[in-house]
Amino acid sequence: MKKWSILLLICCLLAGCTAAPAAREPAESTPSPAAEPAPEEACICTVEMMDWEDSAVDGDGTSLATCRVHMPVLTARRADGTAIETAGTEAEARALTAAETFNAQFAAWTLDEEFQELADLAREERAWRQESGIDWGPAFFTEMTSETYQTDRLVSVAGDYYSYTGGAHPNTVLMAWNFDLETGAFFVPEQLAGDGEAFSKAVSEEIVRQIGETAAEYDLTAAEMFWENYAEIAAGWSSYAVSFDETGMTVGFSPYELAAYAAGPQVFHLSYDLLAPHLSDYGRAVLGLE
Image (cartoon, rainbow, N blue to C red; front, side):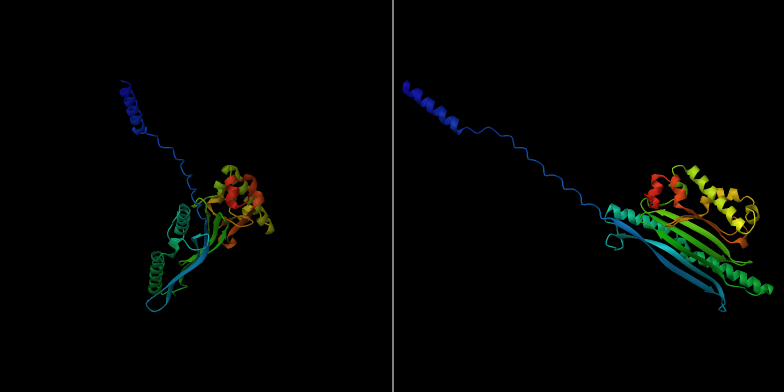
């Protein structure tokens, strides 16, 4: 009996040694830290001036019309200066979109259809003059010249448009465009102010003051040299040609807009010192006055 007890004990011990080990829970692995995304390479936009011209002649070789354009073209570039043709990052996509928005504003100046209309108008005018026994005068023409001021954030374009389509004299129109490179959009001056109404009033008062000074130089009153409602016209200054440069803001009125044609364009300059109290943080950033 004792022998059987010993054998039973040995069998139990052997069974315990050969039993499958209890399942172990896998050890939790520490996740690798996520790699920080590589910073996007900064993009820049550069402005270059482009010249475009065209001309048309009648069947006998007489000049009918000419067109000349000197306009800005915005190009999106990588930091190394290479032009961006296909965007590879969000920053490049934004830069390309900004350039496309800017250039679309000036694209119509180089459309063949627009010039063809001018040439057709000149051809009809010359034919009428020949039938009426009137000499053909100067050829019709349109010409747009422009100057561009650019900072890291702002592109401001001041343009002069000249045209002659018959009549006593050519016409002159002052134009301007202001573009925020960061937002990729054109803006109006009041958007730079904390209080647009107060800003507009301050600029208007300064223009009226300068009008008085200009008239006094010719021993005239403002109402004698300018249209009688000059103050009302000055109050709408932001709808005329407003541009910026390193010294301040310029407001230009084309001939006939503020005074007679013989008086020519009327241009008023306002320093940044005068504008600064009215600018918002956004306005100071756009104009580089921070």
